[in-house]
Image (cartoon, rainbow, N blue to C red; front, top):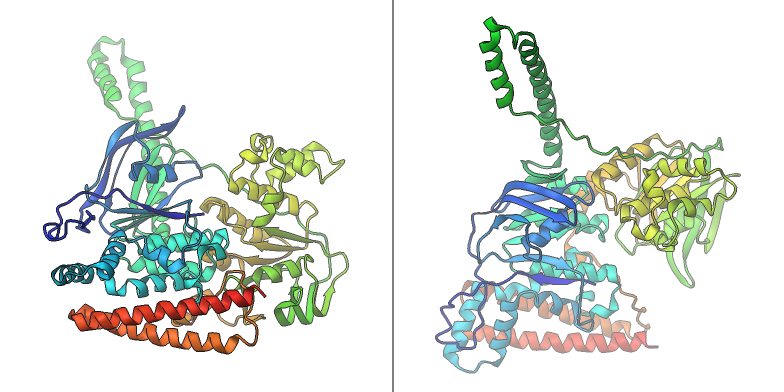
Length: 632
């Protein structure tokens, strides 16, 4: 569960306080120059994360924070929020800096989504309440001036737009949080964080619980916001399209690079080559000087020159050797020979019980295929994966599977089935009964689980290490077909690139569902799109798909993640009528908000309040009918 973390507000004298003694102290959104970290050091126990690091974050920069798992990326965010204290050094930032980030708690499960998001703006919430309660005309005018100043009349439409962008339908925004799963509640918390006023936005892996469609929307949204952003992400495409800078944490150092992730890699590689050459040149010079000293140090005629060279050696500042990144490996076992056509489906339908998710399926998978599955959450991607993996039977149609086909199926939910008290060696040994321990360890090593990690209990492994263990388990029999449902969620960039290389070299077929644009682009040579219950080949490439998503209005995207039952036939006309009325009222409200934004008028405000009351009544009626239908 997640909720918004509001940064510490600075106290200031509000110009309206003399007239409005109840007015709270809100943070002003004044400009600030930058954030500077000077000689910062921080340790956890005996492990030093970084030492004497200095860097500056420019105003309005979009900064991707990268580095291997455990290097201190999340710790840096906690230090910026003031939750932790440095061992030494200083973080200089404006006193009135408003920081927003996402945290792991939602208290009131009965609050409606739109209300929860709006509550992230404390000033809007207070002013809105005051407008409804205040009777004094002079004070109402003062409140309205401030309300207009903070763009308060468009708050509901802005909040709704963010929720729609993150995958919620028009009806969803008026449901309570309790209607949604933990993953969808994380989206609500992200929406609240994006909506809340801020100068500095800290986002830690914001795309982990999003599908490809909402990831692309978030990327576009963050590109346009006028604030400084620090984002921890292992999504290379996301970092390339969003970031103006990369903050790299590596072996105790923190360094800021200008440009996106690809530019950072090129710059870093160029600097490493230059450093390596400079060190090599220095070592040759050092050897030459030392040779002269050793040769003439005790010779009277050359003693002075030898002493001079000794001083040169002492003054010479050593260029440190490069610290290589830890090697990241993935390697899938080669499958045995088999017929080229692995499986096919004719006139197929699939779903759960009487509920049909997919229909009219005509699909074929050949050995060597690399297929990426596209489609919004809830459209049936995971249903298709379970069907192809043999975890779900067809409701209708014919499934033909070639003799001897071995299929491996990966899903993030399967990591929850791992025994936490076992080590990877014990977990793999329990399914490879009778196999030599050396062979078991060899299979684990294929997926980067070293000897020490192979002997570590599962409960102590990171999310990425659990993913590696699961891949080792499901591929132990050298499958012909890999079905991977979001395999990259907990992998860092180096691990993702190692996985991509392994999938490119793999001799079997691959079906992959992922929100990671770069992985899909690098692995897949075919795309399937699931929409309206159909799964069909997609004629374009991923860039075409990206452009098609941006052409769609967010208002037309109707994805309902809650587990609500379908309305009974006799309630459908009533619901449709109410929805048309609500849409009409919202349109009128938006027009009134636009007019108030141009020139405030008391009569327009009265009309706006009337429309607000009418909308609330219509929403209550809609919820009553829906809840009654769900209880049947």
